[in-house]
Image (cartoon, rainbow, N blue to C red; front, side, top):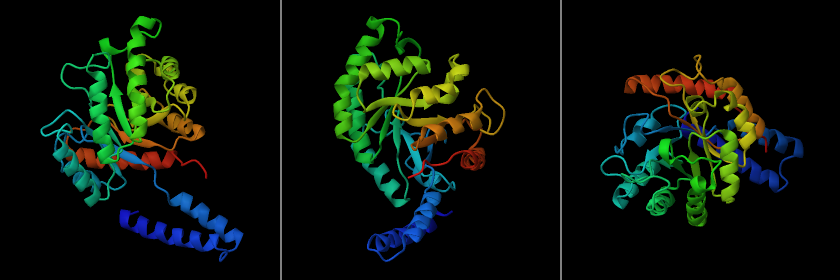
Length: 301
């Protein structure tokens, strides 16, 4: 459905809902209207600027808007010139998002050169990124930490500094309406431990199902969705290497989508699939969106 058509129809349903609330429509009709409205609500599907090979290029918003079904773009904070440390650039992205009726649901790549999550400058990097997210209306900031910066969850001296830093910055993120989404090589169980130790609702997991296989947790990738639960997952990366999501790979995506359905997840699905060319990106993304729509459903209510 075209974006404008959806908004027009949704507006009509809204008006009908107002009339119903005033007593102008029977209860049976109100229930039917609500059911139709739920069916029309779109899945929140986005794509990374990095996936489109357009980091630092504000035209990524217009380009993504031309792909039917894409509703938002995940931007990188520190990559590209200019980047989102430049407030004029932030405002320009916001103008383009408004112009093309697109969202910027999440920001990634928040670390300045040489900074990691366990660096002394990490908290300031997060605070600057929260400011950018607030200006852009982004609801999630992806905090990635891999390799040497990933903590050993069996040793407090390893995970303790990360827990302390995230407890420090979480209240500022919450004030801005932003969730800090952790993406790392830890198992789902270790992510549960980390999130629960931090103990703040503004810090959750940005779940990358494919990464679970990459970091030797393939058998836990799908069960990990239920283990983490809706309350700990703030966003989801969707990818299958260089392949389309429907093709055989390390993740059983239909099973993964069933698990997201079962926990009532209603957040963003952001494509991180690799593509050979911009044309292939547009074509593959449309195929991937059709596959998502085949297997996903919004929770009722």
